[in-house]
Image 1 (cartoon, helix red, strand yellow):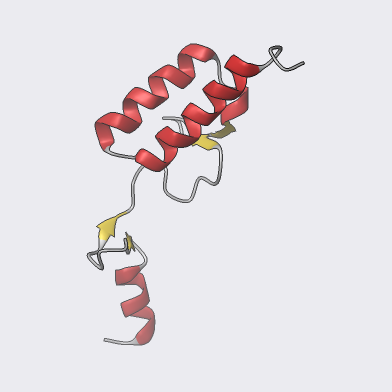
Image 2 (cartoon, helix red, strand yellow):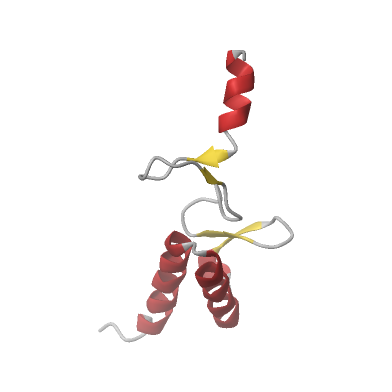
Length: 86
């Protein structure tokens, strides 16, 4: 097909390091330390409540989204160390 049609076919996929196409996930293109809520709103992970962070980690584990889960854990660790630095 034409170039534009081919582009439309492939832009629905992210290409991981294995070379196999992977369909974009729920958090695709939401940015670094951002979380896309179920309504489609993107928020900063640092603005999320403690329970919201824990629930988001559970969702990431269930869907295999390890990158976002790691970002969420970093935010939790930042909160845990707040006030302890001296």
